[in-house]
Image (cartoon, rainbow, N blue to C red; front, side, top):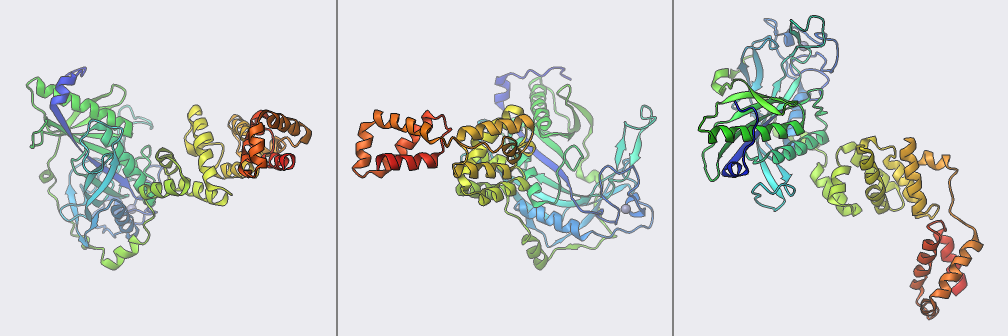
Length: 501
Ligand SMILES: [Zn+2]
């Protein structure tokens, strides 16, 4: 095995990677898929268990209706066709955290098939885009329902240096498995696909897609083939990578490793590999099972699952506006950039907050502008995510209204935003603390500035007096500039009219 992979650009250019992703998502039901045990994360080990999810002989599964609805909703959001009658199957394998000796899953008649996600590849010049120049469609082969297995614990308990413990709280938590077509051509595309997938699932509300808690897990199948070749190369599966960034890194490593093996005259072995994120390398774990190794057969304890047209329509009616559509609408409604729309739609909650603040404000576009011009930069400088912003969307709306009414200037708003970030407090609070700073209403001061502007611009004075009233804005602007934003624009307006009129 190569210890360091330094694949030359030349060798890399000769090959084309083929990537397919399998994503497991835990559904946010209150109880498990085939019993009434709680699905709560973090409870003491083996406290949420019963004969069904412990796999005791004679216990019978009862399907959770909510799990079916969540799975169907997710499949719809991923543009899948729903199969009216799908079949549960037993997938037989031995594992210490799988007490029944089989997992209830779906095999040849899954709940949903033929979906897709459109990903943005404008930042990735290596892939061959089809269709719209910046967008590539990644097919989704299938979405099926299954139960989660338990968890083997190797650390965090007494004796963990010699022993492995089993926690079966997770056994029977409902999962959907989302299998992509091998349409993904680069590690960057894989990253983008996962980001979009996570976002869509989050919008449907069927999962919290929290990678740290294991409610979203991803396995990647990857192979390489000479460019132009139709036949797939032998693939390896990279398993249990716990962040999207690591998946991208693992794929980069694995692609280079495979190219190096082939270039060196070797052969790729079909196997499962684990990624070590500290070393940035993958390691062979076991030779990969083929589907026939699992000896799938229809689950005799469950009836075929029927999601008929009426039920499908009911579920479809709960489908929310999805991120892509929402971004486009928000760009049109508020005049924000595509990039800002991406940030503001990271979660449905944030997008809702932004929109309700923007709508409540006197000028929605000003709210959007302040988010872009004043909020994002400060967040970036502090390394904060928008959810961690000291200034809430409501706070932005309050500040926008104050500028709109002329109560504060743009300069004062900037200062108050700085103070908010320093103090970790929302805008309205800082505004109160600062004694509601008002703009200069000292008329004599402003009159002096205006007289100066009038004296220096006789031509504009003439135009104004000749009836071109829009020139008033020129005088207001000049006075505002000279006062460094401290003058009250409304008052300046009145003074201009008085002095020149
Ligand atoms: Zn149970």
